[in-house]
Length: 579
Image 1 (tube, rainbow, N blue to C red):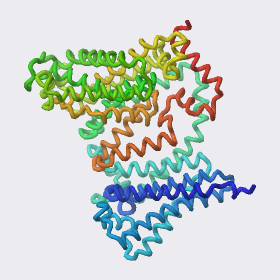
Image 2 (image 1 turned 60 degrees about the horizontal axis):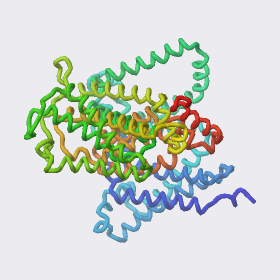
Image 3 (image 1 turned 60 degrees about the vertical axis):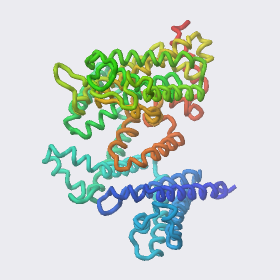
């Protein structure tokens, strides 16, 4: 059998057609037109055009990879065919628009969209030629990138990502540098002119070269650096580790002054989601209990804080406590609610557990809206004049001050989660996650273990809710809908289930970045869905995976079955104290 006959060309064509359909969908929902309002390289290429290029590039790369051929020429041809098909389908949309007015049915099929797709060409034939040739060209580049060595490929991709990222956030970077005019002037050549948004051509080239070169060099130095580090005495390793932590601490402490009010507000929102993510990571990532009603504990913490500290409104009772007096009560109330939820679901697993917890979250939200509890918790009118935190007479009344409170809460939460992970309860959670029946047979008390997981996770969420109520000084039921639970679960999946650093990475990716790009908020859920699908297909372990879970997902590739059995036995043995 020849090499050519082994290539599934039908599969390559299917990939190209799917990519073209996705590109047309993004055009007709208005995403390409909306994204084109922001330039990545000023006057050269916009974010909307980058979006189409990314689709063509991804499809071309996938086509080259799916060719499964040792012949580099076949990989290149596969990439070209896949990219050509995407470009041809987009060109077909342009041709269709010339013969049929699509606007009455498809509102986003506007003249502005087709102006973007045709590169502002006067003749349709030239525009179609650009699209078809451009699709084939990008597919060729994707195929070339695929056949390059992994070290070079990773460096180039990192360089391209950083160019797009810096171009996307150039407004915020300029705003951050405003307090330092000398620095801003020194790097002004990286960006376009004052009336232009995006990078300059020179700036984009320099960023690409620096990042690509640095990534390539680091890939070569990394094994040597790791070997030398491992060869150092334990005292020197500890000194370097503590020195790194000290530098990180200094950066975190100075960050609000560097970010300014707006970015500090974004940082506080990310911090609250990190705190919730740390709690849900214990429930879902460690213990394997799928909880879709996690927002209920967030609401309970917020409402307890509101009821105990409010000094206004029409509530029948209010203790008018300070923030610090009400905080432990709010956390304790959330922990109690978590244990109460855990009792009736002790024998429920998987999808059924997800449905029950989802219902619990909706019950809490409906109770918050009910007229029955309106005299006590405000009903649809919510609670106003919630007390703000204060330390030594200094009121924490803005984002830059609140940042430090949330930072301390996140550090405490991360410390607790880290200590629990390798403790006896943590090993019991992970053993239960693998197989409840085997864990119970090894002597683990599933009742205590599950209730502890629900209680600890709920406590983190209640703490986040209490700080959230103090941050806004008002509470309304619509702030506690199901979408919050979905967002927290999504950031855990994207970051890496069971991974504590993954929670931070997931929150930055799914909460921080969308907050910085509020102008595209209408497409937020669509991007969420696409990101989750891509993560499940190409990196199910997450962006910063937990080692055990990564080993589980790639067990057939890297790890013998006996090693997994040893890990499970070790987990159950440690959890039961060797009984």
